[in-house]
Length: 273
Image (tube, rainbow, N blue to C red; front, side):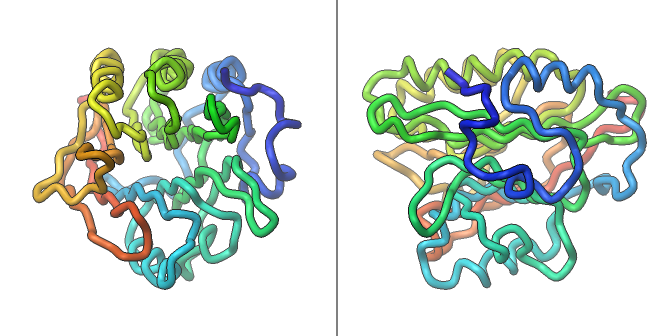
């Protein structure tokens, strides 16, 4: 299950974020934080239309990733990375400072890697949740942040997940999804749920798609669909609720074994919330 103890997370608070929003380490804390959070108008709000990037950056192991990320992040407002590493060029890929929230998991002598959410605006809170690969016992992370929208009692919830991979069955994968279900159910307002969901076989997709349907999440389509595939199945996804998809595309790169997903989304109006 998800590990609730902050002590089991790698890194000090200064290595988890560069903002002063509260950080939670369990589903229960995250839901309680939602109820405590005020949705006052932010100082640097999301634009009515904003670009979001979702990318498994493969631990920055390939030459050219720094320039690639810098170019991708130049005009975007949110970047959701999986297999991110704790280096300055990944936390701050452009001249304009960004807020970053890092949920570290797997650790080597050189780096710790996990999921990282970069944004132009500070989140209300940051949930760093952990589960384990059943075979390898290595950690997999989910980052959840909430952004105020300036509408009374409404905010945008953004889920960045690196899903369980090395199992033949779907029990652990199903459990990882179900453990964030109470958070999705508790949130009133728009949602983005995305990441490397490791759907490399049909049985996993047969779990994922009913799960997203349950929470009224709609899959973002890509044409042409250049998403990275494993065993003939795409593994990276962006799902949305309460947001209008304006544009979507996939960029083919050689700097990772995953291609970045890019989507332009429109926030709801006061009347549509």
